Image 1: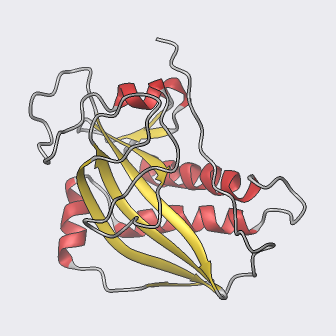
Image 2: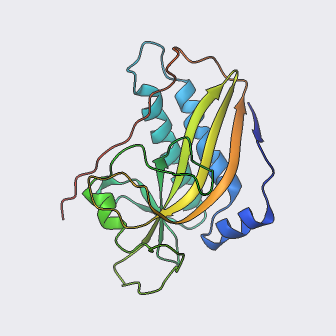
Length: 211
C-alpha cells in the first residue's frame, strides 16, 4: 500500500506536534491501521462495520505506539485514551467532518459527546493555548486525533489534524476549539472501490459516566 501526503509537512507542523510529545509518523501508522481494517469489512456486514473496525484499530494502534514510548493507557470511563508520561495531556480519537484539516473552517465532531468526554474536557483551554495555566491536579488537557476518510477513485484520502476542543457540555457536538494543529491529508492507494455509492458509514460511541 502506497502512502503519500497531499502537501508537504512543514517544520511548524513537527514543532507543534512535538509540544504534545507526538510525531507525524505515529499518527500516520494509527490512521493506516484504521483504514486497513476498514477495507477488510465484509461486503454483507453491518453498514457501520467499516467505521467500527476503523475506530477499534485506530485507537488500538495509536495506544500501542505511544505506550511503547512511555505513554500510559487510560481507560477511564471506557473512553479509549492514552496519557502523556510527564504532562497532563490526554489523547483520544474523533471523527470530524469535511472541514477537518482546514484551519479556519468550521470543524465539528460527527456525534454529540457523552458525560465522560464532557467531564474530561473541563480542564481544557478557552480560545487560546495555555497548556498548564490554572490547571488543577485532577484535570487533564484532552486532545483528539481528528480524522475524516473519504474515497476518491482508487485512493482513500484521510483529512486529519490534532485538536484541543474547548469545554463542551454533554449531549452537544464539539464545534469550538482552543487550538487546532491542521495537517495535510494523507493518501492511501490503490484501494478497492467502496461497496456502495454512500461510502463507509461512520461510527462513534456515547460513554456513560458512572462517577
